[in-house]
Length: 301
Image (cartoon, helix red, strand yellow):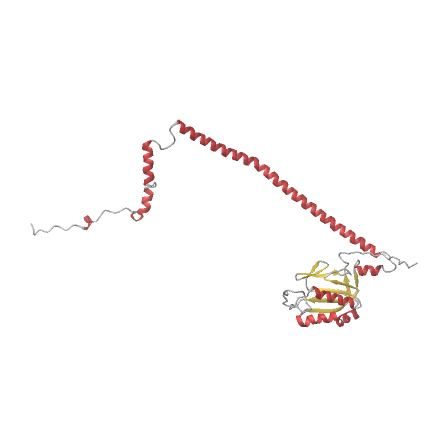
């Protein structure tokens, strides 16, 4: 008996049965099979056993629930009603504000048009008054005041900034304590150029189409040059009416002509001066007429 050996077990009988196809997804399977947490499930089971689960069973609890629902419905209804009432009011007020803004804008545009028409009318009346006979001096008065356009022989001077010029830093333009290190044309430069042309015999001058008068001002606003508060951009075209043969050489020989030459040599400011058979200068855009009366001096009796 002892010598008898037990038959070996087959491998098929020792191996476990086939596993679940989703054995590798045990966590996901557990979540799918147990959608509700066990603690919540136990609590729900206790409420069902106690009879407290679901809707209230007593009349008092039912009435309280119904009252709460009715109150919530009333609040929602009142809110919707107030929103419906307020919406047209707000829309009306908004439209009224828009209409007021549009009316104010139209009125402002109308006033601007009236101002421009009045300015034109005043300028026309001033020019007409300056053209009236005045002992043979009406043409001279109209010329000096810029009331009429002028055409005739003269010179054309074009002044431009140096190539690659940049704005200067601090101080006034072309200070007496040393020129600012900049190749830009400044208002003070244009003042000297214009004064030099006047002194050289110019009868009328314009810069970039802006007619100069005895009351014209050349100023600066930042890096821009203003002529009678109108900004100019380079290059600056200066037209002067006068004797074309004498005006150019006289300007170049003047101190202001030499000043412009220094600007060219030292700072690269560019300019060209040429005589012209005819230049045309427009009338001044705005006139300021001043009158004076002569009083007879009474001698001592």
